[in-house]
Amino acid sequence: MKTFAVRREDTDEQRAELLSVSPHCEYSKCDLIVRMGHTLLCKLEFILVLYSLLHSGHTEEAELTFEPKWSSFFVGESLTFKCDMEEGKTDDWKYTLKKSDWTLYSDIAQQKFKINLLDKRYSGDYQCCGLRKDSDYKKCSNRVSIRLSDRARATLTAATTTVSVGDRVTLICSVEKSAGWRYEWFRRTSHTSEDTINDGLNGNIRVSQGGIYRCRGGRGEPAVYSDPSDEVTIQITFSNKVSVTQKPSWSQIFRGERITLTCEVQGGEGVQWEYEWRRPQSQTFRTKQKDWTITASISGDYSCKSRPTDDSYSATKWSKAFRLSFLGKNFILS
Image (cartoon, rainbow, N blue to C red; front, side):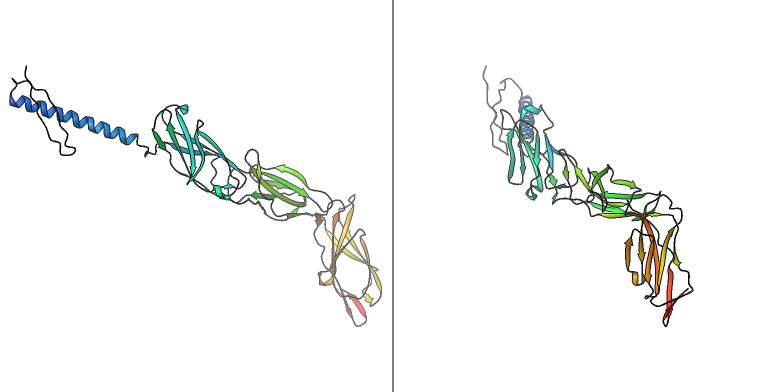
């Protein structure tokens, strides 16, 4: 049987097709065979182009994520990237992690990368790529931005710094509006060293004891700590009423005479008190004695308050002012 070749010119690539046609077929049938062959060839070309695009290395189907999912990091902390190819098995790939032109990991078998953020060079955009083993098929992930700041600092705020005995005050510790922190609290007095008093995971504690407080935050494993906050002094106010009395109780006191002022605390029996006196012009001093003997020489307001000897951050309120005034050579009590 004889055959003849039908040649078709393709406008894109000028390729030739060789089709075997029977000499007994009619022209319309031969034309149909040619056109069917052309259609099949076009479909095959489309499939080849699609396969080439999907495996060209320019797709971004891979996904790069990181833990912990904090909005910002600080120098000294660490994080772990995960590169997911989203096809095949994990061990089908070799993984690379880059930051701009800096390659941190190259062609490793694990899809997770732990990064220690040693300095601010680690701020920037990260991307991972996967190369399928035993082939040249490669694809890369989205870019992930990591913000890195210098060492964090805690801030301590108090609703008030003076609270009545029996009541509590709320202290709030925070670290620069970032997440993941656990908080440590410290208290000291002028007579005692600093002690850890409480862990407040949410950064809030309520205290009823006077003293000097500060806090700091920590996060991560192992923990990286912020710089501590500034100190806040909490004073506890007793409800005991305090008053000043005078002996002798002369209505007139001459200049140079000696009198004794006494700081009286109502309901303070059984407490070891020390006393603080306030003289004219707001001058103050402390003494362990409730009686204060003075030489009549300075006119003005005198007042006192008391505090327990073992707690210098708890005290009564100031007494009502006790006024001494003088005319000429004598003081007059009013």
